[in-house]
Amino acid sequence: MSQNALAQADVSSAELLADNELIAPHGGVLKELYLPAAEAERLKQRSAGLPGIDLDTRQLCDLELLLSGAFSPLEGFLTQRDYARVVDDLRLADGTLWPIPITLDVSEEFAARLVPGSEVALRDSQGVPLAVLDVEDIYRPDREQEALSVFGTTDHTHPGVAELLGRYRPVNLGGRVRGIQSPAHYDFAELRDTPRSLRAWFALNGWSTIVAFQTRNPMHRAHRELTLRAAQQVGAKLLLQPSVGRTKPGDIDHFTRVRCYQALLPQYPTNSARLSLLPLAMRMGGPREALWHAIIRKNYGASHFIVGRDHAGPGKDANGKPFYGPFDAQHLLERHQDELGIRIVPFPAMVYVANRDTYLPSTEVQSDDEVRDISGTQLRQHLQEGSEIPAWFSFPEVVRILRERHPAEAARGFALFFTGLSGAGKSTIAQAVVAQLLERTSRAVTVLDGDEVRKHLSKGLGFSREDRSANVTRIGYVASEIVRHGGIAVCAPIAPYADSRAQARTLVEEHGDFIEIHVATALEVCEARDRKGLYAQARAGTIAQFTGISDPYEVPEQPELRVDGNAAEPVVLARHIVSLLQQRGLLRS
Image 1: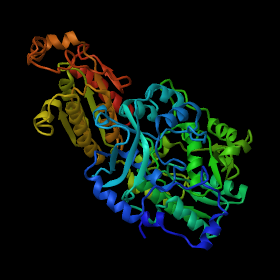
Image 2 (image 1 turned 180 degrees about the vertical axis):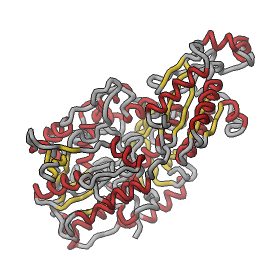
Image 3 (image 1 turned 30 degrees about the vertical axis):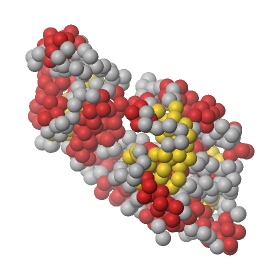
Image 4 (image 1 turned 120 degrees about the vertical axis):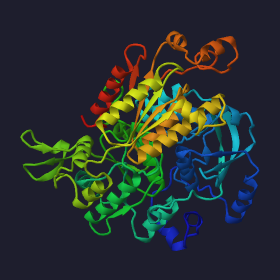
């Protein structure tokens, strides 16, 4: 039976009775938004004539969880009243607890075609219609305020902030959605439950006390010990429900992670643990995100939820300070425990105590204990070097999968993305970098120069903002494919707009590292060089929309490196860039 059919299927009276023993969904009712089959088919046919949006990864994940009821009690993307209350008070307009804005952002150009009462077809990346939005609200949110309220910062080092401020479009559409069909998934179909189908499985198998565990990383022995202890502590079955929609840039791909979870599952007692995948686009929002995760698991039928140290935290800010305190998430959920319904199981980190040859909660460690741990960075180093990973750290089945995905000595792909004004020296410095790379490595290096891309990949595009953004997105896509296969992409467009640079970063970081290099040569220097006479023509008005003269250049706020193209010879600047790559472990010294 398909996911869509299963989500809409009737369950027997016996199953309904058993289902009543499970925790009620958030708000009391599971809000499944799919239309009956005949009505969905009629809407599908009519949607071809409606204005439409091809959803990005985040929007697609949000829509899927709206349609299935995982975001109950939401019935669509937030209207302005709901949005404002969520941002300010962690509540919907009717007072229901809800911590994360679920919004549909669109461009000004698209929004200009709509009025309240319009219908919008929501499609996947292949143009397949999934739902129709009944537009109730068209509004322009304050993204800076949203970042401060939801994430507690406007620091672009935070991946949620970087996306919100760099990639969200300026207008939100709010309104109810009517589901036509579920998004297609061709991987791990047997593990992709809806709230309805998972609740039915719990009921049929007699599970009613269920503790859920959220993860976005491979699980090792410490995670197994933590989840076992948490389940035993509350007398519950265990639901392992990893996020597989979109996580933090640089995370291990979900295919590898799910294979690791499958290998881990036999390490639990028989009939004690269930693996189910959650197509969630994480925001890495710390305490608010932890509260959101708990609500979602409540909708799937879990009665308890494990909240660990720094739950859903993205790490450290630009000054090296953690964005959130280690127990901020636990404290927030404890404050809302009674109205939340699902019970919180706070748990400290589990650490290996060598002198006792066992894992213990960090709170039980004695001063004379010998504690050992392997960080994520150290694990990656072990994998890269092919060195031994201690048996106390992970299971051999899990290590085998990770080694297969990350073979020893395999080079990680990366993209160098030069941006700056025309004449800043981007191409010249890029050429010097390429020469120095090829002196040191036999790896494939591909140059995507701005002028060459315009002649071939982006032939026919003009210089409007939309066309310029399309050009940079194309560069980002090609670079991402090069990086995916372990290559090095060297890109040197002007790339004047922050949002299109951010989009290129997103594409590349799905597969490897993105190194943004702002060639910050002063305008007067660029104009003095002007070998092609372009600045003179722009000053004379014969070239319109020329970056730095009649069109803006949005200076990168936090590039990986900023260099002055007039401060030193290209070969010297190139050495600084190569040194950065060596420091990051992307090139061997």
